[in-house]
Image (cartoon, rainbow, N blue to C red; front, side, top):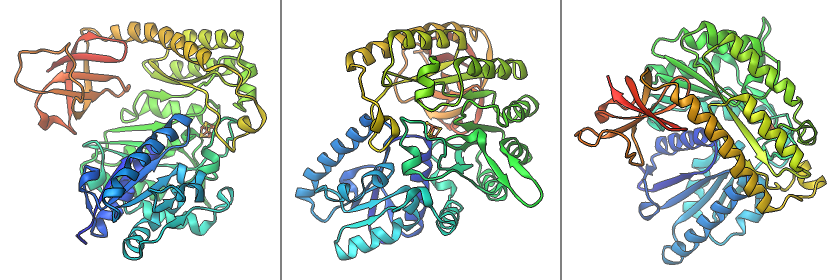
Length: 461
Ligand code: SF4
């Protein structure tokens, strides 16, 4: 250890969680000690998300808090990494609390940046000037950094995220990702599989392959073009890997049959599909530059259910996109009813600077309307989730145990001396039950005795 301590706070999606794990791994290898609180830290790193305005507001409020701490401890270094760093660059560096701004493509430099800032006490900026024109050298540097990922950085016992692709070329009009994470690049299958083998050797049982549009994974070598189903096949052969997941899928026919067939054929590929629809109105889908209609989306769901009858499907929706009328919203409600999702993530539109929607469309749906549509859609989904969850009553399920349940659930047995644990089924259902903490990272069988829309409760068998 070099005597310096780092606290890392993560905001945002699984991609960010993976980047945080990579950064933690790199810093540990360089001799930094990782600590759980700002109080103990010489360096505070914030891995940020730009997808919604609210996510950025939370980071600014965190930075405001750190500014006050820095008044008492001016030697403390604060670094902002991730999507906000790339989006705001120098503007963020001007913030009183911030010493380092480092974009997602620059995380391989993080140790060097920290060491220099600690020694020279000067502000540093490392972002990509032309993010849509990343070079082969940058990709190679990221690839090398990625392969340094070690088990010590796993976030949940027995599980790990593995990146299949970086960036995105889709340019949905509301989305900032293509402008902060750069062009879509699929990693070489050999690199992905090598990483999974190493993780399996270290006790990882579940890998989640990540990509902004992971179902579009495509890697051309001289012999063939690899798709996500090829990664499933190769990963399934790895001893120790028992469950393979993938997020997030874009509604598209491309490789869809191959992916679903692999799910049907391999007991290791989890029967779970997260496929955001965003809206049920074709007019709004067009304005969002989503390249499908509501009907085409439903046809994909029908096909998924025909190939994998017990598949669980989750969706994402955005309410209050510019120009969304009551009729458009009703079309979304209809789609949610027809789709019969296990669960849905629902967000209120917020304009992201630099995106096409922000440049060309007025954010004309009042906040109150966005809020009420959000609540209404959640209520529709809750009824569906409740009914689908209830089908599990009395059934036995296999779960991968994550660890102690963070919030106490009153519904499980009170008169037991084992703690409440939380796990997930292959279909991504959350299961809460009492059991020994030593089960974290292991598979367990649970009999479901009670259900709620988003949680199954049960007894360890
Ligand atoms: S597919 Fe669309 S929403 Fe998803 S990351 Fe790419 S641009 Fe953003």
